[in-house]
Each structure stands twice: as structure tokens, then as C-alpha cells.
Image 1 (cartoon, one colour):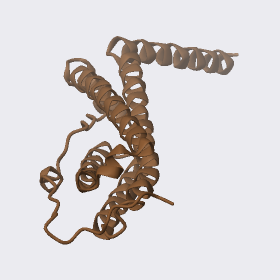
Image 2 (cartoon, one colour):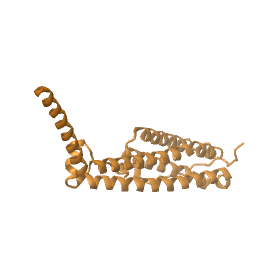
Image 3 (cartoon, helix red, strand yellow):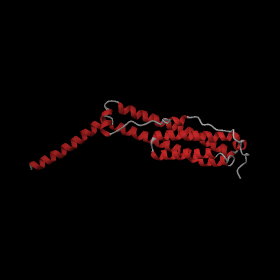
Image 4 (tube, rainbow, N blue to C red):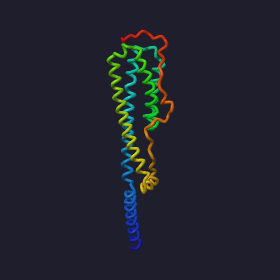
Length: 206
């Protein structure tokens, strides 16, 4: 009887300790940390969706430009490599790598769109104009998604640095989140396009 009562007391005591621990974690911000973490991850996922959308527009844009400027192979190669880098970054899920890869792609697109200045027929192509509008809309959505993510990351990072939440963060392994900012200096170099070489006659796509 004594052993049974001891076992019963031990089990009951374990439940009380577990409830006390749960209440303690809740009081130290555990639930809020989890909520803010989920919000930030959701915002990061949306950034990836918009970057993917941008990457999906590139092949059609390149093919349209090729119809008029087939000799600009160096530009097409640069854009293709930058697009591949962005897709890899999105798949990897690192927010800084996504930011850097997106800026590298912007450099390539800057060169690609600058090429159109030498081809009046390309500038008037309805498919080309439509793709430009699609890119502009996507870039606006990326800017909004980037801001939403950075705001969510800032809220999360600020919360886990406060006391007593910082204690809970250390206990649970919660770490500060990176921001969507460009950290690659090469990504900020302005694109250049050389129009000094002879241009092939502009011709519409077949």
C-alpha cells in the first residue's frame, strides 16, 4: 500500500511539475516566440514565392529579346546564370542568399532591358511590353514581401532579446533571424552595355 501510494504521489508530482514548467514557459514568452517564429517563416516563404515568380518570367523575356538581338549572347548567358543562382537560393531557403541572388539577377536584367534601346522594333513588341509590365508588377510584390518579412523578423528578434523572453529563447534554441538585405558588394555594381560594336539589323521574330 505504501509503495502504491508513493508511486501515485510520484506520478501526481510529475504532472504538477510539468504543468508548472508549462506555465513558467508561457509566462516567459514561449508561446509568443513560437507565434512570431511562424509569422516570420510564413513571410519568408512568400518572399520565395515572389522570387520564383520573377524567375519564371525570365525565359520568355530572353526568348523575346533573342528574336531581335540574337548576337547579344553574353547578356543572355549572364541572365541565365543569374536566374539559376536565384532558383538555387530560393530552394536553399537562406534569406540573405536570396537577397544577393535577386540583386545579381537585377543586374543581368538591367543589361538585357538596356539592349532593347538599340532595337526600336523590340521596344514596340507587344509581347515584350507585356513581359516588362509583368516584371514590374512582380518586383513590386517582391518589395512588399521583403518589407513584410523584415518587419516580422525585426519583431521576432526584438522580442527574444527582451527579459525574461531571452531566457526562454536560450532554453529553446531560438535564434535571431537574418534580414533580406544585400551583403554582396558585387551585386551593387551598375550594369554596363556596350553599343559601340556593329549592331545586327533589327528583325522581328518569325
